[in-house]
Length: 257
Image (cartoon, rainbow, N blue to C red; front, top):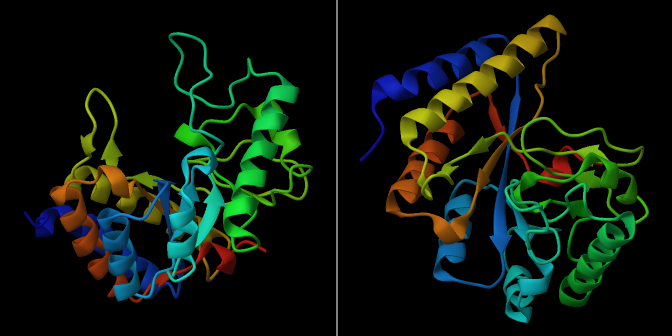
């Protein structure tokens, strides 16, 4: 079911205010857990292609198939390293994390390097030196390992941890999925309200700094687990955003040097 006009109104109003202030709002798209070509991945790229969007695919190195590399070579998308095996190493009862604080520095370094070797074997130079931690969790003490492991960008969720020199943040801010107590689409009204708040934050910050370009706003999806309601929401959302004067869809390479 299409989302209602009332649910869309706060987002529309915030984007209109941004346009009135002469602001450009960069939006970008990250899709997680890519491992092989599929009808769902093709559906994602068909949608992004329709609106000239180049998404970043967070690829799980240990699970990715050579077919994914062959497919991606012909697709309008970029690839990044999504951990190593998307395996949980957190203590029992803790939130899932592949790189928790309890992991030794050597163990964390070995996993990062193993992931890079696999990405290099699959994609050669056709992937970006961006690290995306599984479950968007990465113990802050492991951040110091990122430069030596060849990463120039860290992409998590929300506010980035303290990153070492030479590593830039490129975080996402909107997750359309609910993961607990059951995995399902979060719902149009909740997603739209969250987007409106993020746009408002950027508009207000840009106004106070007399800026013309707000901080990038990242959309996170997981193509493998989307149901039809999630797909319909994304199609309607992207169509609406792409028609708003303040919105500028960007590839991650457009705002990360």
